[in-house]
Structure formats: C-alpha cells, structure tokens
Image 1 (cartoon, rainbow, N blue to C red):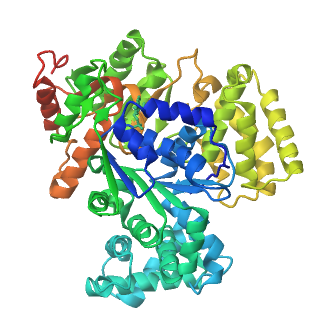
Image 2 (cartoon, helix red, strand yellow):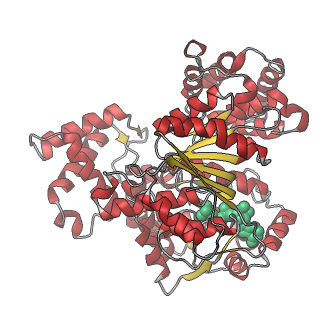
Image 3 (spheres, rainbow, N blue to C red):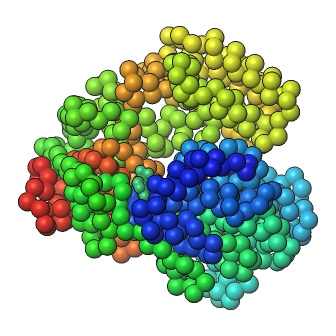
Amino acid sequence: MQSASWPAVSSSRLLLQALEELAANPEQSAAVRETGHCVVLAGPGSGKTKTLTTAMARALAEDVVEPRGVACITYNNECAIELEMRLARLGMEAGDRVFVGTVHGFALSQVIAPYARCVPIGLPADFRVAKRAEMRASVEAAYAVAIAGTDDPHRRWSFASEKRRRDVDRTRPEWRGRNPELAMFIEAYEFKLRQQGLIDFDDMPLLAYRMIKEHDWIRDALRARFPILFVDEYQDLGHALHELVLLSCFGGGIRLFAVGDADQSIYGFTGANPELLEGLTERPDVRTIRLRFNYRSGRKIVRASLGALGEERDYRERAGAPEGELTFWSTTQGLDMQARAIAETVVPKLVEKGIPLDEIAVLYRAAYLGDKVADALKQADIPFVRTDGNALVRRSSRLARFIEDCARWVVGGWRDADPRYSRLIYRASLLVFGRHATADEERFLSEQLIGFLQSTIGHVDGTHAWLQRFDRELISSWRSIGRNSEQEWDVCVEMIANTDPASSLDMPLGHFAGRVGGTGRVNLSTLHSVKGREFDAVVMYGVNARDFPSERDKRTAGALRETRRLFYVGVTRPRKELGLIFQENQQSPWVNELYQRSKADDSDAGVGL
Ligand SMILES: Nc1ncnc2c1ncn2[C@@H]1O[C@H](COP(=O)(O)OP(=O)(O)OP(=O)(O)O)[C@@H](O)[C@H]1O
C-alpha cells in the first residue's frame, strides 16, 4: 500500500514516440487526446494500459500545469509497480506530481493522513492500521454487543464485510433498510477499533469517501492537486472506488480517464462488480471508446480465447499478426504427472523453439499447484520465479523487488547497467526515507549501498547467505534510521527463511536474480496474479474437468461465470504459444469449447486433443 510520485518531466521525445506508436489506431489516439471524461473499454491485449500510460504522459505535458499533477489508481500493489515501470519507460521520473497506487493507498496517503485531524472523523492524530489479531478481537467484542447470538462471530462477519464494502454511502436508506442487524454489527466493530485508535483496510476508502462527501473543501483540495484521475482495471475495483469516482469526478470536477474490461473481472469475492464499469459508459457526460484490435496474440490464440470465454466479441488480431500456436498436452495421470510433463517436455520444447525461459509462464489456480510445478522444475534444474502466495519474492513488495534487483546488479548487472545503480540508490532512498531525504542522508545511504553491493560481487555461497548479509549490513541499519512507516522490513527475514539450506530451499544467487546464462527464469503464477501481464508462451496447468470449473464454482451462476473469466484471463496472456495440459479424456469442458472455436474457420486448429 505504498505510492510513488514523479515530477513534471515526461521526456518529450519518449512521449512523441509513444504517441506515434498509437497514431495508426484512431481509437487509441482519440482516447489519448480526450480532454473530457473518458472510459476505454476493450478486450485483452488491445492496448488499454498502453493507452492509459500515454494519456497520463500527454496530460502531464500538455493539460496539467505544474505544480498540479495526476493520480492513477489500480487494483493492487503489484499492478501499481507494473504501471510505475511502464511510466518510467515513458520518461516519468520521480517527484511530487504523479501518484500511482491502490485505492487504499490513495485514500490513506492523499485524504486520511493529510486531512483527518482537520475534521471530526473520530480518528486520533496517531491512529494506526489494526493488526489481524486486533481486528479479530474487535469482531468478537462487537458481535457480543450487537448480535449476542450463538453462531461463529467471524462467519457472521464475512456477511457484514460484504455489506460494508457494498453499501458505501451510509446515508442511503439501504444501509439500515437492508439487513439492519449487520449494520449494527459493523458500527459496533468500527467503534471498538476507534476506541483503540485503529482503522482497518476496508476503512480506508470508506473514511476517505465520508470525508470528501461531508467536506467540500477536501474535494476542492484534491482537485487542486490532481485535476485528472486515471483508473486502470476499473472492473476489479469495487464499490468504494466507484463511489469515490462518482463523488470526486462527476460531482467534484476532477476529470476521469478509466480503462477496463468487464470480461476480465475476476475479483468478485472482494466486492468487485463489472456492472459498475458498464454503468459509467451509459452516462451522457462520458465519452466511451472501444478498442478493437488485439496487439498481443497470434490469430489462432485470439480465436481460441473467444471459445474460452464462451461468448462472441468484436475483437480481432491486428493486421499481419503471426499465426500463434495452440498445443494440447494430455497425460495418463493427474496433477503430479502433468507437472512433470511441463518440466520434462513442454518447457524444453518451447526452449528448443527459441523461446527464452523468462518468456514462458506456467499458470494455475492456487499456490499449492505452484508447489507441484516448482518441485518438478527443481528436479529438472530449470530456474523459476513464483508470483503466488508461496513466492520467494513477493511481487507486491517494493522492498522484496528492490532486494531482487540488488542481486541482479551483483551477479552481473553492474557491467551492463541492468539495473542502473542510480535507480537502485533512488529506490533505496524512497524505501528508507520516503519522499524527502536530505543530501547527507542520500550520501550516507549511497556509501552504504555501494559498499555492500561491491563487496558481494562474485558471491558464491548461495542466496540464503547473501540475504543474511543484506539483512545484517543494510536492513538492520535501515530499520533504525528509516522514516517510511509503510515499510515492511521483515520481508527480508521472510526471504531468508524461504531459502533455508536445511530444507533444500537455497539456490545460487544467479538463479535468484534471474541471470542464468542470459536465459532468466520460468514464471510461475496464479491466474489471479497474472492479470495485465504477457509472455511469448503460456502453459495452462491442470485444466482438468474437476477444476475448471470445480464443484464449488458450480454452486452459483455468478461464481461459475467468474471462474470462466479467470480461465479467459489465462488464455489471453501469450503472444505466440498457448499450451493447455490436462489428464487424458478428463479435460475441462472449456478446453473443448476453446478447441472447437479455434477450429471453426481453420482446419489447422492445433496439435493434439
Ligand atoms: N497501437 C499499438 N501498436 C503496437 N503495439 C501495441 C499498440 N497498442 C498496444 N500494443 C502492445 O500490445 C500489448 C498489449 O498492450 P496492453 O498491455 O496495454 O493491453 P491491455 O489492453 O492493457 O491488455 P490486458 O487487458 O490483457 O492486460 C503490449 O505489448 C503493447 O505494447
């Protein structure tokens, strides 16, 4: 839940280049130049994020006069970090004019932290975010007061949480009209938290909403700072963000630029609702632009993806797109054998075709499946990086990614400036001091960092020992001097535990850093975490009938639709090669549909099945 800020500079050369790249596409160009509210709706790979980042750079250069800036909200920290990297490629360097972060980060850092002490919102000046145990205790105490029943308070709280996320505006009749008992439960819970000077995660957008709604001057202050609000992945952002948008943009004069795809809405369990995005397009004051071309995937993959979704859409591959390859792999047994087949056959075949390891992704539904693939790849001595709950490097942690990049520098990056030392020191300063470091502080930090990095060039004792040194020589000092309250220094301790040689988890530093003879590492990711990313080749692991969809998915029509969209998100990630692996004669019915659709107007539909 951090954020980053950039100054005014968007290099005009990079911006011109980006505008030129979009010039052949009239819809993208129109969106980038739009100066009113704009919603871009489009399918996978159609350049929504590219359009959004270019629109941000153009707006900063042409529409927004310094010191004003723009804010960009996206689904989670991982998406925010990806967006920051894309913006950096457009020449947007750090400073105070651009916010990129989650809706929670925006609410906390741009509304609650600066203004909470000026309005009667019930927060003490030194409020903090509740820990899990404090939240659980508050749920139990609130249950005793508000409900005093005999069922499990936490089970009941899951219904209350849903209401809390959905009924954002509590002045509306449905707050008490619909399930009043839950409303009392929620209020009692929040009261318990406030008594201890605490807020929780869901409080953040709710409190920000209330503050903006009740105090016009806060809305004016926000507009003064950020006259334009950009939102990526709108379909997954839920009711709180939607209400904030209605209030600040349509009611408060901030210009909105939102992009999204209802077909890729996969976070219903957190309160997301694709209809909110559709609703925006019906407003007369919003210009809706639909993009039609898929720039990412080969023709065969684009067609197959429509079979995966199970609905027709007016999306096409771009003119001159490569064919793309579709391969079906079946094994005689279940998931373990499928994992071995990936390591022993599928990945080596992709590498034979010239696809580098870091351009291959293996996708699955849950982290325990990632364990199976990870074990099989280890056996085959194929390096990999995970993006799931069991990942060694948490993709949502800036500190974890910084440590990984330091390792990259140490194992060879120092030679070819990949990554550049200036970026590393800049990021270290942000991590330790937040946005404002003195010249002395920067000098001290730089001497410390370069001293450590240089002394570990040529390190041969494995990642575990290197991380221990990192913790001892850098983190322990940063813990004591750090001013950035959002920092999770324990991430390094976690990584040390996750590379414990006693459990055979250690690896050469080059594997950890993704520099193995220039080939990098295979990406292992859950389908949820892969949103927004793309690779040359994607292997969908375990697409068996019992999992796609599972019995649980079949319980409600909504859950079934969402799982199908999840399948679609996976299928739409590859540029050139899509492989699906399943147990013989037990493939998901969606694999059959995908196959049929890909065959519909082509005799050469794919290999196998
Ligand atoms: N006009 C264009 N010309 C060439 N390439 C483009 C163009 N627009 C987008 N691309 C490329 O297409 C790919 C997909 O773009 P992007 O990631 O922005 O799509 P998206 O709509 O956000 O995808 P998704 O919703 O699947 O995450 C990227 O590699 C991007 O550089």
